[in-house]
Length: 109
Image 1 (cartoon, rainbow, N blue to C red):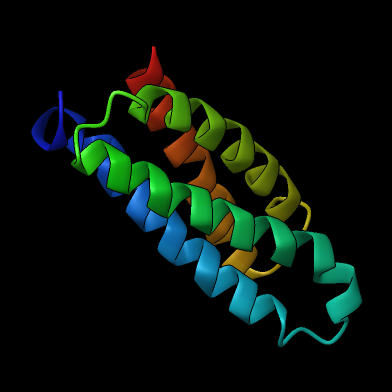
Image 2 (cartoon, one colour):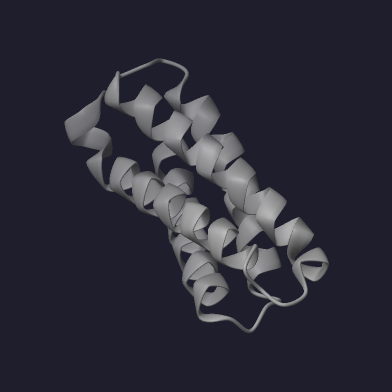
């Protein structure tokens, strides 16, 4: 298995990582940055794991499924946290995280 078989999951991971980075950056510009601290931390962690998952899938790594299982956990956590905030960037991020988690669940099954 590799890139072509896992393309939809790779694309979801890359999209999620990009949106998580955008969300983290946008959260630092919010009026109450302290209130956004958990969101920012999870955004950064989620982006890192999503990029890693996309990379190992692209390489056809035998550990790709294991990394995608971890990606599901962090995407679920990030999506839940972002869902608590009423900002456009957090809403977009929550949506991307949930989609990525769904794709990673399918891939790792």
